Length: 87
Image: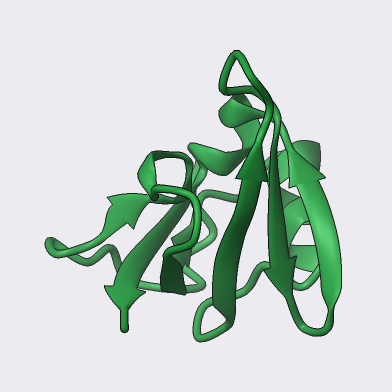
């Protein structure tokens, strides 16, 4: 279930797919369950800029910076978030 807080974007990529050092603008968050709602509560809402800071050696989890703080997410959580790359 999706709560419709943002439209999907055909040019968006999954947050989990962005390379380290890249920036993105959140375009959609798949919510509708407790994990998705928690992501929204943490500030991962459409329109928020996010930077990929680092990734664990095996690729999971990753650390992101947004809204002045750093957040560590598992790949399964980051795959719920779509972003548009920005320069």
